[in-house]
Length: 132
Image 1 (tube, rainbow, N blue to C red):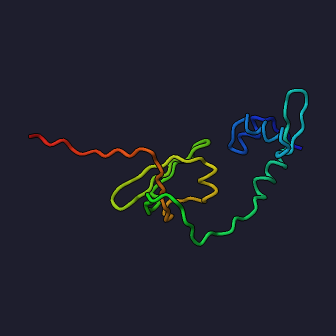
Image 2: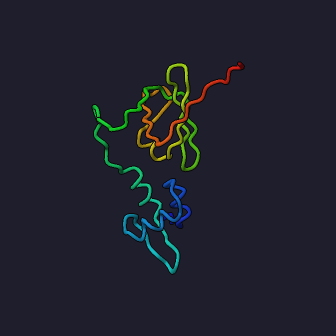
Image 3: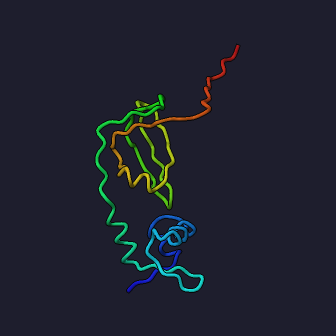
């Protein structure tokens, strides 16, 4: 049996150690507590990762945000907990930083057609300054 501590389980799950400890305390992550230390069976963690229920495909959806831009994933950099997603929208590029788990849940890859939804309280407009 291969046993992981909270740090090892966090690396495997791509979450923080505090999140792993909270899930263990809530009984949502199979674990055993020895003194002040949480221990996890690697097989249990891997079973959770591989045993995700399939998500039914969504044909369409309605959302209140009006600022939607259709584009294509031009590039991705996934590092640690975060993913930087570059979208090509016409001849422009938009960069979005999302969580790694969101990128994985969406199964994003270069070439995918996606929709960027922009919901912001502030949008700034700039213009080149012309000499008088």
